[in-house]
Image 1: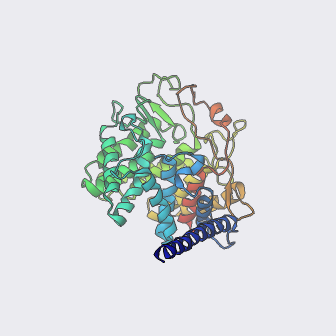
Image 2: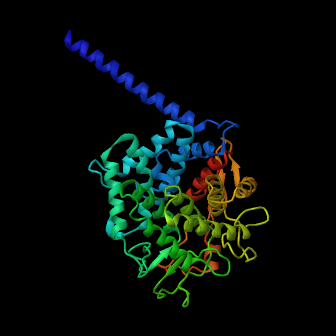
Image 3: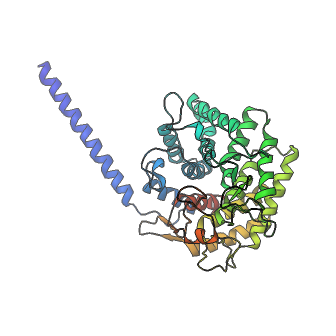
Length: 404
C-alpha cells in the first residue's frame, strides 16, 4: 500500500514538473512572439528589445561566455536608471542576475586578473553600489573594493594619468575616463571621505591639456605621453582621429562624474568648465539635422557617415547636463531636436515593435596586432553595425533623460 502511494505521488509530481516546464516554454515563446505596444516610451521599448534579444545580460552583442565587460556595464547602467524611474523589478533583476553570474560565492569576479590593469573593468563596478545598498550582499562590496584596489595600483603616465591597459604603456584613451571616473568618484565620496577627488580631477585635466584639439576643442581618441608608438603625433603624442564616440564617452564621463562630485569642492567648477567647453565645441560640429559624424571634425570627408552611438551619447549628455544645471538650459532644446532627428535617421521598429538602430561604429582601437594606425581612413572603413550595445544603451539613456 505504501509503495503504491509513493509511486502515485512520484508520478503526479513528475507530471506537474513536466507541465510547469511545458507552460514556461509556451510563455517564453509567447513573450518572444509578442508585439510591443504602440504607446511604449522609447526607453522601455529598447529595454524590452534587449531583454528579448539577450535574456542573459552577459550575452549582449553576442558574447558567448560570461564576461565582466564594459559593454554590459554600459547597458545595465541604462537599465538601472530605468528601474529607478519605473520601479519595475524586472529591470533590477536583469542587473542582479548578471552580477551573480559573474561574481562567485567568495566575492571574486570570474576570470578577472588585476595584472591586466584593464581600466574597462571598473565600469561594471558602478552597478554594485546600488545592488549592495539593496541586498547587503557582502560579495558586491568585496568586488567594489577589489576594483578600487586596481585603480590604486593602476600604472600611470609620468604626469599621473591612468594607462588604459597594461599592454598600452604610457597611453591614456578617452573612453577610459568614462570607464573609471564615475566609479572612482562614487567610491571615494562614499567610502573615503572624498580623498581621491583631486586625483579624479587630474585625469580630466590631462585630457584637456593633451587630448583636446587646440583647433576644434574636440578630443582625440588617445594620447601617448612617450610619443613612441607609431600612431602618435610626434609633437603632441595624440592619435590621428577625432572619433565621434570618443566625444560621447568623454561627455558622459563628465556628466556622470559630476553627479557624485561635491559642489563645494574647488575642482567642481573646473569640471563643469570642461563640460561646457566640450559641449560648445561638439555643438559646432553637429550636422544640420543635429547629429554627429564618425570622424567628427570632418563631415565632408569621403565616405564619412552620421554615426548613431556618438549621437545618442552626446544627446544624453546635453539633456542630463541641462537638467542638472551643469549646462545652460537651452541645451535641453538642442538635445530634443537632435533626438527627433535621431529617430528619423537611425531608428526603426521591426514587426514585433522592437527597436533597430543603424550605423553603429565598430569597436575601433589603436596599436595591437595587426597594427591599428588610427587614421581617418581606418575609422571610416571600420564596418558599421546595427543595434550593438553602445547605441542601444545611449539611446535608452537619452530617451530616459528626455522622457520620450
